[in-house]
Image (cartoon, rainbow, N blue to C red):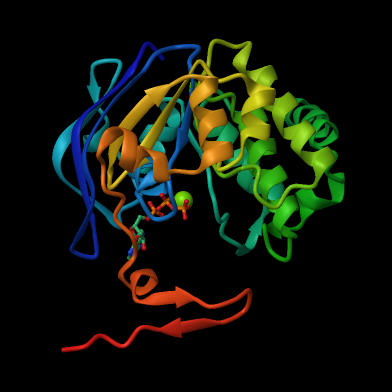
Length: 274
Ligand SMILES: Nc1ncnc2c1ncn2[C@@H]1O[C@H](COP(=O)(O)OP(=O)(O)OP(=O)(O)O)[C@@H](O)[C@H]1O
Ligand SMILES: [Mg+2]
């Protein structure tokens, strides 16, 4: 991959505009950290780049090495080297994990992978992720624990060797040791000239994978850019300072705005006076 260029991207879901003019360029070997408050469009951006049909592009462009990504089907995007490690990996009963992985690996190759070579690749990746080889014979994600699903996403990444790996909250649900396995896998793929777009709410993963820059999505747009210092500021201070320092009002969910916290485990509805 040379570069992915996103220009003035507007995306709607179920008729509601979520992304409102995203501009972003990702170059080879870059690791971009994507942060932002809940519900502001981070997963929407990744799902749109990967081609989830629920997300409708109403304006703007996504160009990969001079080619129009928006004209490509999902499998074409995967063949071009795009990979999405999902925030909520789906369970697919009836599809054996190993068969799925083999089909995905073969889709990126000219000749099908030999069985022994595939076995060795899956064995090596499973060891790195500390996943039992038995899991390869189970249905994809069915009954996997939260952390196992995330490890399995990274196992896919190791086998597919993407050019741009987009990882959506890959650290959520991982135990402390598994976080290290995931970070090590990312570091290994970083050595291959691949690029990363990584969403996480926590500084810890970013400390381990050393992003080249950080961007913050607010109200469906990239509002702030910086480096590790920006990630650290968000980790310690949250997002409120953006309102005071940059004058950007952070849109909140209507439901949240009508609720007022009155304790640890109770909320009181504010009755509007009309
Ligand atoms: N399939 C969908 N149907 C309806 N609304 C959707 C759908 N997908 C996303 N949205 C809405 O779009 C908005 C942005 O969601 P998105 O998942 O991109 O947020 P996010 O920034 O990834 O948040 P989080 O940090 O909580 O993961 C939210 O208000 C969400 O409810
Ligand atoms: Mg999300």
